[in-house]
Image 1 (spheres, rainbow, N blue to C red):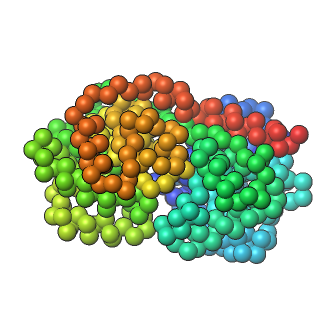
Image 2: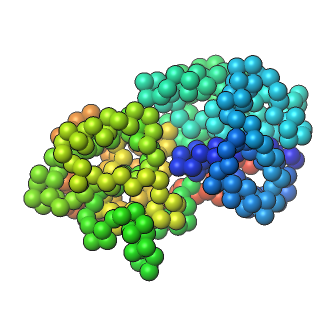
Image 3: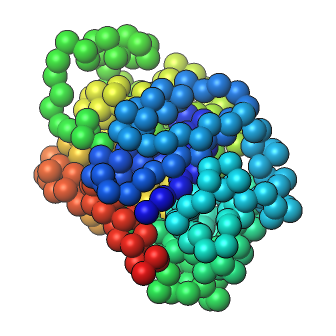
Length: 378
């Protein structure tokens, strides 16, 4: 069987869909030596992530690489629904597309996609208009062509059924994303000091950690407000707050909050952190903070738990499905957040890191993917 996969999202380092696409494809190529994989990649500008292409080639994939700008693909595939992707890759049995474009396919080719979340539908104010339109258009086509749908959580599946009742429920399958094998507890080696120096962090500092995009949905302004109250307590007066991630949409509000509260020397932005470096930060943090309004899955809190570090996360959406209740809090109540934060920092809580890694495993995700492919072509 020929399986086509659009891996264009790999051009955008530092985003969840990039991590998802890379790990899913890598594990598919590792466990499946029967089917042929044809990977479509298009980016006008050369990316650091082009190294992934060589890795995939070495694992047996055929790469179809083009320099077509995303704006052009959005015009032809999103607006005109013209120009089948298979004109570039050759005829496929199944074609999988992961981001917000559903390319036209040749007759007889089965479509398959992942819907990571419906934040663009439920909270459109958290996205730019063109992104909302692109996701809506993709989903309309997904329903129209009866594509197989993979979702990251039962929460997202329920959202799909609620907001798009015309979708075929039988076409939706849940497959949790996995946690990389590098995320483990008690990492102590000579690289620790190198990593901390690389990001300008004092090895002996006490800190809270946030990993993810800097955007409104993540409630970083709220988090910073609570942090400013936390450090007024003498017990936590020497703590810092480290933010690791790309600056996204409406990031200015976060910087303005820090300036208003005079926290410039207590809140540190270290930008995108390489996957091989992240475990060192999780291990050193006293608490990972992830107070999102909504998540289709939410990988950083689970990576933190896999490293043995406690988490405080929003009591909503998929977080209720993947996290223990003791780590969840109502993000609409600042007092409860502060109270929970202090409780987690003061008390020892047993974390079964091995169970977290077993439950969220990329090989199992890839096996689920393959089952859906097989079922869709029967």
